[in-house]
Length: 264
Image 1 (cartoon, rainbow, N blue to C red):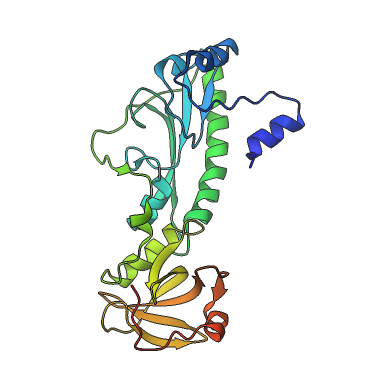
Image 2: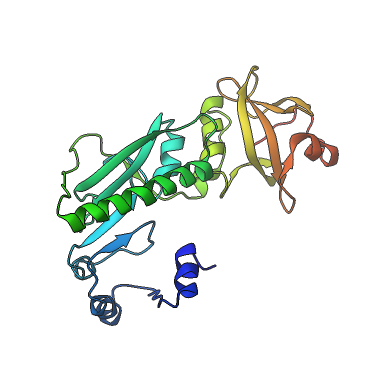
């Protein structure tokens, strides 16, 4: 699917170049031929070689969705949620050869709401980043931009999500599992096993109760309560393999998920 940037460019007759790799000389030459003043990078999936970073007069700026140096890497939004961070933000940084290690031009924090998931937090940070990059570009053009090195302390790495991150371990505390559900929504979704089949948990909240990890304690219109290693989790939206995402009450009308059953 074309991104919003590509759709806007196409509507205005602007050329869009999407190289599969930046390792080939032809791709680097095409970028250099533009003679850009500045490169702006946001959630880009390719590593920019030094030749590309040097192709523009003012170099390359990255809109990074974290308070650097915390959560350098591919999944800063999800890792902040998984860790239970109280805040995150956007850093505008000059790109260098390292992984999100360049000097900072601007940084702004926002609080992570208790109900935020990866989708809502992404949208908040996208709006903030859009404002901040315009301000940074204006500062560069006016010659008043100031760069600051990143602190040497507080460095953490936000590795890309994989299948292990999506699997719920019911031995963990209910608060941790609830954060996992939020961090993996809207995609790929936190998952468990039920009768040997995957069952996705899309919405859940810590609840009162206790029992054997993964045991269904309660099942009704208000949700399915599942015991965790510490506390319990009330699941209010689920999806079985091949089915739709459904509120718990609707899900239970078609699937008997009875107290005493075990998940995982």
